[in-house]
Image (cartoon, rainbow, N blue to C red; front, side):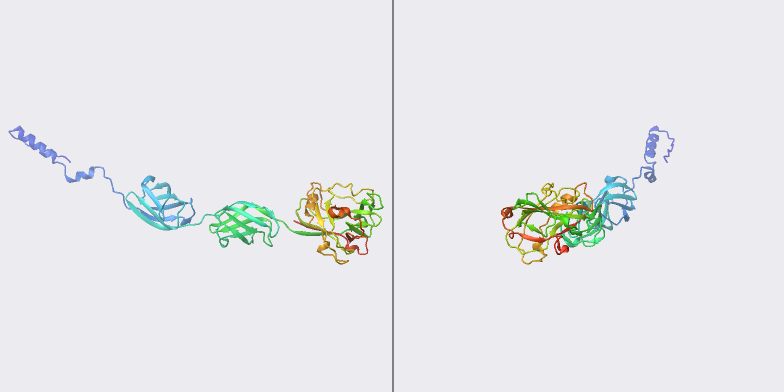
Length: 404
């Protein structure tokens, strides 16, 4: 408080000088407390971090004391890598885990003070699946999974098909090659990599593999038609022959086309046929070169043969066809690989993938002589196979189909 001392003298000059002296010195040392007091920043402390582990981009809350409410006055590093600060107040700072950070201490700098806090554990990034090729397949089918953050080594990853563990054949950080394991069922694919486990949004459809055997069921289901006449008119149908001449002359008739009609073929519409063939039984030996081209009748449900002249040649054929060069038949009665056609899966697929195909319909397989068999003039130059009406009807031509 200021005090003015009034002194009465005879000389006014003395009064004025004394007054000035008193005014100047009237403030005591306690006046400093009445000025604006700027308290220096106190050392910050870190009490806790939450969470204590996470991945790049995750938020971490640092709780403590004496942080600055201005974001720019704070700096946070994770094991030496600067983190982005999202918000700050005197007791809390929120950061995001910076790219490239590794496990280590949280360090906070506020103006002129640095403080180190608890260890934050940086987890590997979660794996990401971006594509699975294919999305359907049977057991042992190769499947390629592309994405990000997979383990670079095969042993770093685990792949399962709806819970059934698969074998991995190759791996990189962006691609895994595996195959459908035995026992797998339709469902999602899961990958466990160093960063954790991820599950596909789409189900992988496991195709069941079915082997279907379809025998001939009547005399009228395996037929011959004269293609090159050696007596009988071209187009003559034989529904009761005792055997099937494959690429050789039928005595008194000629070079024959072959028709095999299979009934009650229980393949679902749209199924994928992976293998199909006709299994014959040798009715005689034969070593000459023989070539047949095999087709299917391009209808949803093949009608029974009636014996009408030219009936087989009038059939609409599938676009798909395969050439069968028949190996030597060594012994009569053999029913092995030599008596088995080449794979005719493409032909069966074309038929069962028709929109009007229904499981249980009939399929007609048609064989025509081609290549070296077009100029055959011998009745023993090709192959003879048992048919339904022969002495062993159970040994007739049988259709075998493997489908998914």
